[in-house]
Every structure is written in C-alpha cells, then in structure tokens.
Image 1: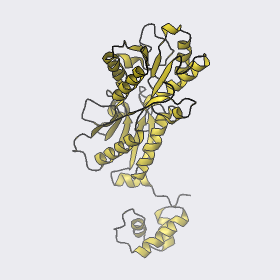
Image 2 (image 1 turned 180 degrees about the vertical axis):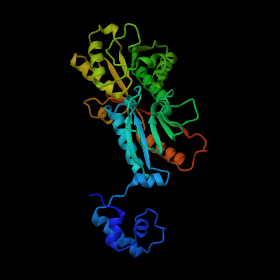
Image 3 (image 1 turned 60 degrees about the vertical axis):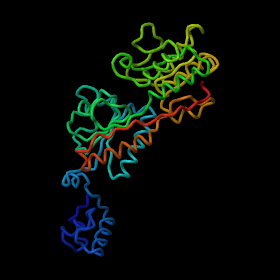
Image 4 (image 1 turned 90 degrees about the horizontal axis):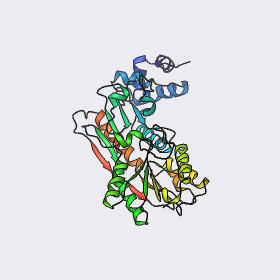
Length: 342
C-alpha cells in the first residue's frame, strides 16, 4: 500500500501541512528541526516514497532529461549512456533513454512519449534536429558528436582531424592502397561524415587515390547494412576482402567504427589473412574491447566522458535560466591510439 503524507502526519501527530513542509526538499520552510527530523523518521519507517513527478510539475520542472543516442548494441553508445546517466543523477536529474534508430521511424512510439522533459541530450548528425526526431518544439537540447550549421548547443568530436592523423600514420607505415569502409550508404552522398572528409583530404594531400567501400559505390565489396554498421557487417566484408587477389585488395582498411573493425578482424583472420602482415586494420571510437586483443586495435580515441560531462553542464545551464544565453558550442580533440593492427 502506498504511504501518503496524511499517513505520516497521523503517525507523527502533526498537521498534513506541517508534514508536507518537513518532507520538502527546501529546508528553509518554517518547521522546527526536531519536528522535521521526527517526521522524516516516521516517513522512513513507513516506507514513504515522494512523488517526484508531481512535485516537479508543481515547480514547472520535472528534473527529468531525455538521452537520445545511437544503436545501444554498440558498446560505444552503451558506455556513453552509462556515463551520461551517472552525470545526470549527480546533477539532480533522472534520465529516460532511447535510440535514434527507434525514434527516427515514421510515427514511431518512443520512450519519451507523454513525459514532460526538462531537456534532452541528443547524439545527432548536423542535419538532424530534436524537433524532427522528438516532435517537440522549444525543448532545451544539447547535441553531441557533430558540429552544426545552426545556433544550437553542441559538443562535437574532431573525428576529421583524427581521420587525417590515422591516414598519415598508415602512410608513414608504408601503406599506399588505403580504403575507408563505411556502413552508411547515404554517408557517401548526402550526410557529412567527418571521418570520410578527413580521410579524403589526407589522401589528396599525399597523392593517394581514395578507396571508399560502401553500398553506394559501384563494384564495392562487403554486404554492409545501411542502418547497422555492426560486427556481423564487418565480418562479412572481411571474408569477402580476403577472397580477392592480393593485388586487388587494400593494403590497409580504415573502418567507420571499432565494432565494424572488430568484426572485420575476425573475418580476415578466419580466412587465413594475417594482421597487419597481409592487411592493416584500424577503427574509430577507441572502445575498450579493442585494447584486449592479441594485437590491440589501432583506433581514433574519442573523449566520451568529457563530451558527456560538458554536454550535461551545457544542458543544465540552458534549462536553469539560460534561455537567452549565447550558443554553447565546442569541438573536443580526438587522439590516435596506435596498436598492433597497423
């Protein structure tokens, strides 16, 4: 049975108004400390749980934020959600989470439906908006991952510079036929992919012909899912790559993310190729799993903890009286983690 403030007041021998004030989060209300302590002891003993949503609605702040991320099956996003949730709770907020995959479906139901959110953190490319995905206007939003052409708040990652550093590293190792593998067909045509842009510029600067492996490229190898980019996609592409004659396959592969790279590693090894003797391999994101291999995966490390910490700070500032604050925008540097696969 749910315990009410009226029940606590009856046990403590005080009025409902006094019990309500004593259980409030605002200690300045006029209730003697000894009375406040006694009422709260009764509340604990009776198992009282305050209705935080009702309190929030009265205060016009629910203390709930949404966190919208990519595919939760990718450990990169699972780790991001864990960090963001811990930081939000520390800041006094509860979290409702969902994925862009579910939310982007036409007329899709999301976990945010019906919840009065104070704001949202959203992993999104530069051409995606919270109003489009969440179908809500004027909701304080901080975007994560990518720069944006509008005046929105964002915390971006410099994967463009990271990709250039990675390609220059591969060239320094003596590789010339360097391919970029992307799971996103649209990424080649319409949606800016800063990894692809950095890769292409580094190739151009070094006189190397870009080699893009994607579903959009005629004759491209690999059964790569347009919306997935999962380990199985990388595995299938690795097996198919290994079947090509040596002179027809890349000397090095730069994968869109580490999950694809880890799948490709298994596909290449299962087909009898050696890494990096027969083909070098690198990814992007710097997930922990890539460290614990017989030869750690070369990858572009992204500061996920700092990104989430900065995004939470931006969002709290925007939600708590910062409506007229200038756009909060920052690009965080990435770093190259050189492993045994290159």
